[in-house]
Length: 114
Image 1 (tube, rainbow, N blue to C red):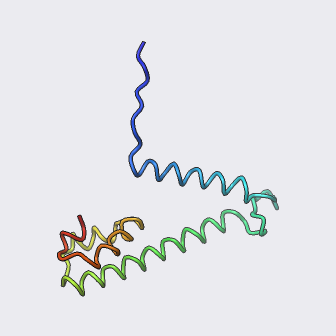
Image 2: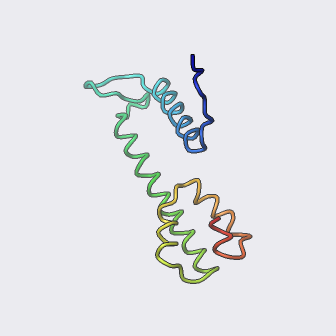
């Protein structure tokens, strides 16, 4: 018989697992009431409305982080090519945070983004 092979989870997979655990924890502890067949939080807010509000706020915050980082990079290294600009605008929040810390010591754009 073959033994099942286990593979180590990558960084993205571990992060996704963590988000799912937090999501389940959030749902289990936060949902208390149902009004008009709609799940509600303890605060009385409808769950979907709260989720959508958080998502919009998170996207807005990420756009602000991206805009600030682009501005800092252009100020330090000059105008950016479109592929570099696209790479930065498509980066996730964790990567943007990493680059925003790295820009303080990076001597080149290549050093910053790698």
